[in-house]
Image 1 (tube, rainbow over the protein chains, first blue to last red):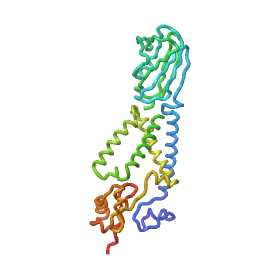
Image 2: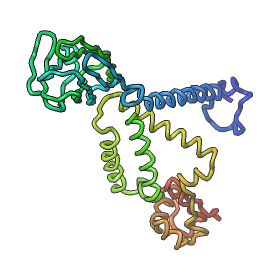
Image 3: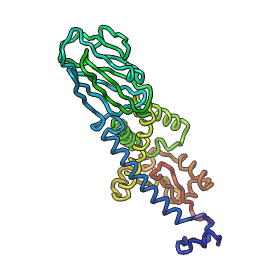
Image 4: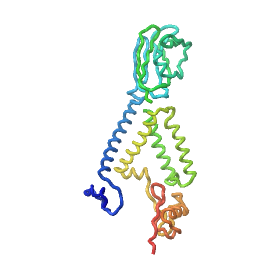
Length: 170
Length: 149
């Protein structure tokens, strides 16, 4: 018998003439770790179903501001489109919606529904001009181009800005 | 969320399709089986990840698929009927050197398949040297030779 066999004599396999590198202590530890890993995987899946990694109940957020409401996702993914849905309650013709530069540096705007009549760059962001009859919904389809924590500012005309935060997974 | 749902859908979809196809269909017997497997993998990938190329999506997909596999294997241990349902049952196709024609026809294997397995696994030359040939649940054919005299 080899020395490694003698170490675990109480666990000796029945066919001890087999030349085999069995190590039941190691094996047991491996099984334990595997089981812990299964639990971890189950938790990850549960979290994903709840929306911790985007699209799910825990991921949707709504912010009420002066004259507008914003629905957005709390968790986004790099290079996957996400929506900012503004519901405009205020009036004004045209409706001016300003998005801060901070956010626009993080995302690429893929499309806006409805299309703004005009987009105007100002010192701290972009002002989008919409012709619409409030209440109405404006949806920005944006694609995050960096990952991490990003916060954005939006405001309607001269109203107080609202701040929203998203975490973008890599 | 959608990633997990997609992974679950494709897992069970593929399980049903391969189960309907039968054990022999993709048990890497021929080059074409291999090509078919590659094409299926490629097509599945599109539907599986969709437009989302983030690492998070890939990780979630892998975790979901592996977890399903582990979960199902645990269930199969507990419920033998489920095991049968998912994995199928073995089938004897040659007994005492005699091919069981109807079984082989139903399982879509022929004598040459059995002989290939016999040569590869046991170095057996002729059918009459085989005691049993079994189409296993994996799709492989296993050979038990007649005792040499």
